[in-house]
Image 1 (cartoon, rainbow, N blue to C red):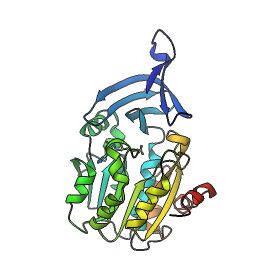
Image 2 (cartoon, protein in one colour):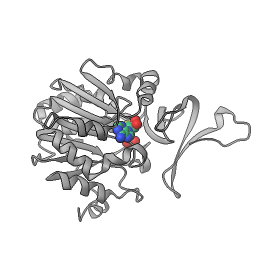
Image 3 (cartoon, protein in one colour):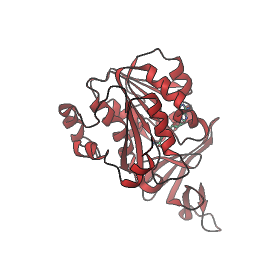
Length: 292
Ligand code: SAM
């Protein structure tokens, strides 16, 4: 939500405020609004902020900012890609800003990275306003498909992807189906033996999402499920979680060190210690997931 705190609507007084719920919000001072449109799926806004650089929001919710997008994109990509011994085909569901593709394609072993984003306007906004992210969308080893990720997965052949990354919006609107047990079972079907799924799983501090249910859905589909956490200042509560699941009992800390050392050199957040430590969960989150 973009709102002015003065009567004269001076751009200097414009603030972006994300209300996480009825009690908590996050605000950014807006320097300039660059784009606002209503796509068939959601409202798309891009603005230049004073503190976090360029920002993309969908339906008023933070998707990425110049200042801290690297945390989310590096962790959702490098962790599964460096645990898998030889990831060749990667599917990204959502992720229309291109940041996840950009990180996936830093791995030379990846022969093809397919992105399925429901909203073509997000991809266009990224191409126009976020060239550093859109680099991934324009990469020769990337294939961009505009459509619903749930349908795309249903129609995909069995066993064709080594990694599936679910880089979705919150479990509301078009993102709901991407957190269901049925969807995760379909994801499992399209994974090759030893495949890994990595799914964004919201902030552990936010009580309005039933994290245990989402991890339970993952667990119904996969034998081995872990939660991983990281710090992202512009996301709700500044603390994020992702679900890492596979059927191959991949220990998340069994990292291909040679490839990881090369990746960490050019990363701003990811390194081998962060990778291992990201699976150490605070007790309140362990308790939330205790019965999963
Ligand atoms: N990092 C972000 C976060 O956690 O807030 C996610 C960013 S990425 C832009 C999320 C994308 O998922 C959006 O562009 C949205 O359009 C897309 N999306 C939502 N539901 C989808 C679906 N059913 N199929 C494919 N893409 C979907």
